[in-house]
Image 1 (tube, helix red, strand yellow):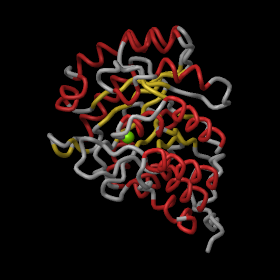
Image 2: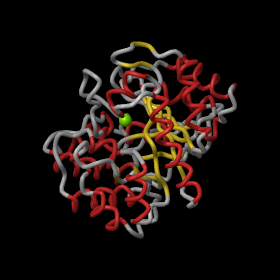
Image 3: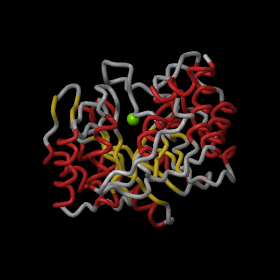
Length: 312
Ligand code: MG
């Protein structure tokens, strides 16, 4: 037994601290079949903040028709005042930005695609049309002093197009950053990336002037590669890693039910490497066990299962 904590043995050439961008309440719950009551969502975000997560993507101001799981954004967001965590929200377009700004959101994210097929299926637009749609959104947010994250999905593989060329991802990423985004999140939406691919994309982005300190990584564990890919990114100097508490949210476009990298699995590795996260792993695990009860099924996170084993 480890007493619930990994043995701490630092690795060489790694950052001393990583900022975890927790996506469970948004990316996680949006991809769960169950629609969670607003009060439970608010309690979930409160518990995540209580476990020490400093950035928690809280909800999405997408049209309720498209994502009924997050249709309560207007009711939820004001319930999260004063948590001491920053609470980014996803905005798909100008209307979404209006709604988010009306509630005082200080950080937003837009959601782009590196491939034409996913842009067409998810955004009903070409890549160029989606960037044109984001342009005034990012500009207006920046004018208001709002921090903007640009998600780029399908950065490694696409279920319809297959492997996605690095040069293509870099081109769209550069355009997204040139709109004025503060941060770029590289999404491995179907979880097919391997570490060499991650390193080649990061190097190619750097070559085109996208700095490592503006890049976050968003890995999915479909093929069990998320932590290997994360470690490669950390060795490259990346210090922002996306993860979802308890591994919430399968990807509807991947054949497997396994989706987002579980925050607990990430924290176990980071703390084992002596990397600071500010997260209390015990409290986080308890939160995911509680959330799994709300959803009526066990967490897919190996770390959650291992740490909660004795109680089950
Ligand atoms: Mg995801």
